[in-house]
Image: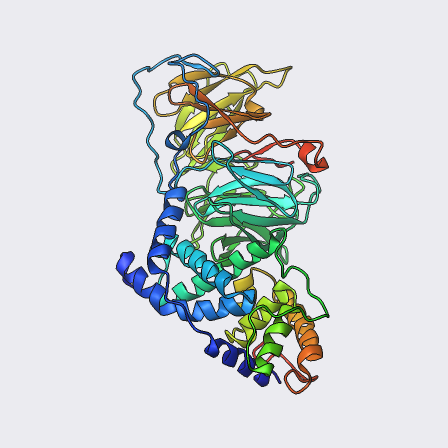
Length: 170
Length: 370
């Protein structure tokens, strides 16, 4: 893989859209998502010389993004710290009612549950890959997934998250 | 099935208006991160500095006054860390801090940042399970997916790895874990048995590519990249503590690869020798009789000695060889190359604000095992 700032700049431009989408889904906040992606990529830059290939670079940046988000969530006052059964006000109003339901339902999850859902069902990671990205045990991923899906089922209904949901790529 | 959920997530993401990549901001931010990693002790100090050309606050050089300033010997940037209660402080002004979810028990320098071993009480004896948090130079923390029992892990300031031993079916295995990816990079079988010391697996010491393992009959060195195992008869079967390929054996310092003696302390009298993380200096503490008001530090290459004021057991090392002590809101930092010391102000945690703040300071670069 090419090294240096030019190669890293190309990597930033290529990886930004995907990382941004992941960040918005995890944070539920577009402005915060930009800051999160910027921070994750800056940290990736610091390790750029050790990263072997582009695939590894993206995985590294995604893991850094997830870990940075986790540290943000741990800060006092983070508004999404606690999950609730009562759907919060949706800050970024969308016109599509189903879309509103999804983002609101995601906000009803704990940050960790939300991260699990995004990594597994948006990033399409396996349990093991999710555990690696979140720096936790596979068992934690499974239990968080189960809890998250149960909560999503309440808000989105069986049509979206069926009772028989299983892990598609354990 | 979750196909519908996956589809909704992709639809939601696809509808997002993607802002232009902040390429220049990322590069600027990234370079700042790199610079922070390259932070060096003297240049970064913005605090009160008191320097005396040989005497003041610390010690004085007794030999080899013409010794040249010490340059870093490794690629990794110099770091300095200590903890008070559940808070880890970085840098010579303690200006970067991070709160741990548990109490720090040992702080390890790695090339990726300071790795903090934590548990419920900070105790080392019977303190398992232990967890690990990586604190990067900007204070960002990340929890590792590693939980260890009553074993002695080890890290190298110039490597992003944590190593430990485990017993699998009565056999010894060494595990090397990359703290940047939070993944094991090697799991290796080690010959021999382990029954001494009271730990659940042999204590290890990581130095470069070598993991030193103190088994019952001999200390062995495992090259974790190749899997090659060799015996190191020059090291006794005891707690291994290897720094840059050097180790203390009694009142001497040896080269672990050749067995050659690099330094011998004359008139040792039960002295307790401790190597700097870069293996260039050795601190002489003990014997532990009463209050200690000064101690000697020797440079191995030249035999030069400086005397420093203070208690050798209440001080820490930077990730190379600077010695520092924190008392209240003052940090005194001394360079054993020339005996010069500086004093700076650091945050002074209020012990009344949290019971955890009454827990003694833990210094990085020191061993806290029992």
